Image (cartoon, rainbow, N blue to C red; front, side, top):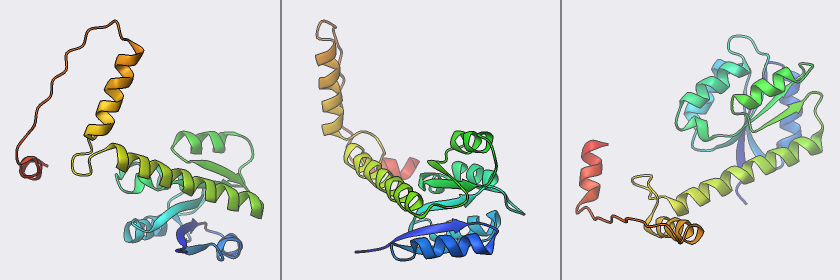
Length: 182
């Protein structure tokens, strides 16, 4: 079984060590001690990182800035983020979730909760990626023919009394056109 890779981002050495020990049997672990280092690791390893465990309060570049930067990058925005923080109150959690974090874990850490949330987050991401590949053309990102026909059939079944116009066309050498204008 291939181990998934997790990026642990926390300015406290003890927290990085705790998370590393909790997860080392199930995951390959990369570490970053601040947001700037996290962004470097993300760019270097984007194709293998399955999730990010991200602290909010850090020097140089905090967790919110990391989430904002990841959200603006088409590749990094697909990597799920689980935020961890000691901040009291719901404000930090609400802000993190509103910025795109998939989950929030309060410190101190509870081993079983972290493992399950991480596993579930990765499973959801991978399932969504499989579904997206099955529904969309890899080259264009548009719905493929089978998925399109299924959606048309659903629409007609929901509203059989409506009239529809359907336009279908084919483009010869579409890959050449797409490569020229992409």
